Length: 592
Image (tube, rainbow, N blue to C red; front, side, top):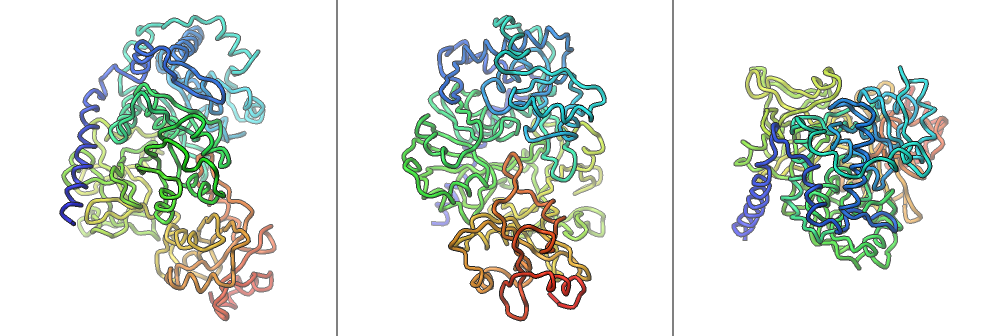
């Protein structure tokens, strides 16, 4: 049986990666073929085929191409020079894709601004891209005045929406192709997008995203899911981010299929949307899956034609339940940082794995796990000054070898100093360079990679490393706990950080039984010392949980609006934390 499983595992990997490599033969730094050529090709061959579904409207490939041409002619009329950036601040809708496609046709690049940014963050993101023109959806125009004081020189705003200045300009713009001359000289190595980090720990960084990287990422999903023209890809994720704006878009428009654009993710409308639009594939983020599982049963959650889903962050503890409850035939989990060169896919659906890179594929996808000092937050080096690769099952930082080969280069950020911080040098030999993912993972004996934690999230307590993902997994299985966010907080007089968990619970939660339940799941040092019961957990626009604010707020019950509990050593149970008890803890009169 093990031999059969091994043969099946290798067959799946080799056929999937082989298909991908064959398609990637055309994706090189010097290639002039971009996503523009691919979409224009579909517009010529299947002009009346549906390209985009949005609300009750359908946009054909002919209409998509014509609208993009209008954007191209408009951009060219502004006198922008090739390679200039235009910022795009717009909620999900067809014009978002028409805009960046039109900018590409004009030889320009698009800065994809996070729609949640306000004030200084918003001004900063526009300025670091060097954008002097900003396309703004009318629904977000109200937020631009807040950002005005932070601009060195305010950019020109073009408001998209009925009777606004951009639509007036587009109405008189030509809809025929501006021709390849407007983008002559643009090759794979040239920038297509700026895509931004979330900025949860400071101002956002703008990651360079080339045309080669765009096609490289799209091709990976073509090889894994084999999308066809009949496929309809449902996308509830933001178009300003890589999963929703590159992976989902590529699965649809890159292969002549249809993209179903959802303005914003909705738990209550999710399965009815899939039924309504006859979707065959959807993209996800892990927290999205948890939200769907927490929802009561609905009429269409198995009444759909979905053949596969792809995304990242689906936790092992809910994987099987999610797949069984919603009748999902195939899950393709993947790993890849927006700006990084480490990418992998879990082609065969091994539960919990974010991807696989067998040893025989390392020449093409050099991805390793090196030992890491959690307390100092640096890789461990041996007596020779070089890093030490982890043994199978050992947790360390995942890194990717940097080279000029397609897909292995690290394109970095707009600031050289930010780029350098992500490069690890002199790793396995003097002079080599590797991209630091900032993620702790383990790699098993079959070369599957499993995500453990973000660096900075894992913390030390009682001399031991505590992985927030392990604690999250244990808490998520407790009846009544609907959402979990685990982090470490400083306690005066104590080394390391004490574990704390923000929880969203329902009426089925029994706090009296929590401590005994965790005894069999977590080591004593890993059990949360503090609990914070919240009505909801704050997330970023891409559903990543916010921890920084929670860490700063600590566990003082008199300063927080939420109930705080602590694991009382005397009773071995979670008790309500009072201001008096808090004072005893911070004054070191109680040992945790």
